[in-house]
Image (cartoon, rainbow, N blue to C red):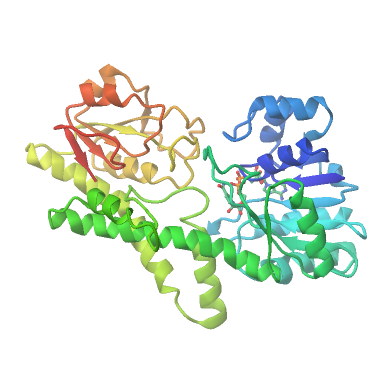
Length: 418
Ligand SMILES: NC(=O)c1ccc[n+]([C@@H]2O[C@H](COP(=O)([O-])OP(=O)(O)OC[C@H]3O[C@@H](n4cnc5c(N)ncnc54)[C@H](O)[C@@H]3O)[C@@H](O)[C@H]2O)c1
């Protein structure tokens, strides 16, 4: 089949390459000409998709990246994987809307359109469908298939890749569900059908809100436990020995990425708008997780205070700018906020992260460095924010005079744990 994947980012690229590998003729359409150019040169920026896989798919003619909308023409299946950010705290669906308008121009009877972007329940049927229908003159369900299937991609996860992770699928009617399920059944081991797009949309937000809330829970406990002189990490390990009814979450410097800081607010916005009610769990989790960078900064201040020193004028080495270990994604990363707070307080802040290449979002005052013995020795404090496996932790323990370890990766007399 001719498959168009709209958006060639962290979600769209793995999907497009997988679809090409099972034999579809895939167009990876993206409005970002720079991204398309590098993909056309066979260069991947997503950890889970090697440049070799892109090159192989291009070579056998099953994959092509394009920034020309006309290349969307003639599709049998189109999947939309464009960003869904918050703008001024409100869901910003302009990219989904643009994608719908583009696809509507090329929509033919019998084709299938699937939305994958994370969004509030109701988007597929109330916003996406009317735009497709208006632009094409066709009716969802009657003339073309329409569905929603949330993405669960976990960048850097060595066990649960695209193929192994079950995929929730839905359609606006029985025929749409059948078409959506048939498409994904070729790509992944397990598909999980639900009654309508709304359940699939909510399932995704439930998953992310669950994570957000539980991370907030352990973060709050970590802050209390320190004042109660309790080792929270030991307590978490002990609780994790329970084989049922408990799931392990660990404290950290906050949440980042495209999902946790944003997706739960899509749900709370919808609840507030439709029902006039606050989604209190989300508000609380946003509050706690959003303030973790302040807490990390506070811990740096406390550590300096014990030495009768100030943050102002001190040299701080941050380890990890990505929001998550072993990935290069620094979007919404709490590391960026920590660095900003320390810079504002007058610290000289340096940061090492072998994975993060895009520096657009990084404060221009921040100095990017390699993790070396000299950098470690020259730092007044080292703050481990993202515990990439690529860091040489023996080197850190051997040469840093003081470390604030936000991930409990290290131990020793010079290590303070969050
Ligand atoms: N990154 C993740 O781990 C992850 C996981 C699950 C779900 N999601 C969701 O998937 C969606 C996409 O996320 P992402 O991380 O892949 O984003 P991304 O920013 O990496 O990629 C999105 C791409 O879409 C392109 N784009 C924007 N508007 C377009 C348009 N009108 N036509 C064609 N291309 C367009 C952008 O140029 C960009 O390259 C979001 O809703 C996100 O919440 C992300």
